[in-house]
Image (cartoon, rainbow, N blue to C red; front, side):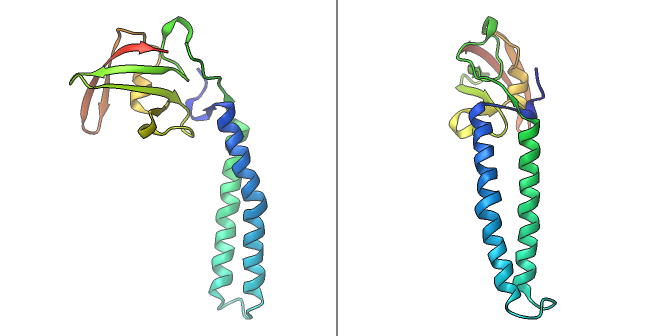
Length: 157
């Protein structure tokens, strides 16, 4: 299995490209305008607006560099509605029951696409790591900050 930190769907990669385009276009233009305006206000040594804009420019360039790194390292993994052999894998929809009888359903996704409240669990999360490679009927024990959680896999789609 590829490095979970770099796994993403084609849609996730497309979103990163879109975000990069906005930052490199509108983001850079807006900061350049702020710097230009602040320069017109005079002495740069004591011009806090200029220094703030330059700091924001540095943060923007760092964010752009990180996005480019993520895009370059991306490993596209197709989400599958049914994984080979019924095992939990990237893109799987997993229905589980914990030791208290509480049932939950999660889709295993990239960390970029994760949204636990929407049932999208990062493949790097402790719960997903414990479930990966298991089949319906298997049990998984997950050490969490609030204690150990015992999960039984009910189904994998």
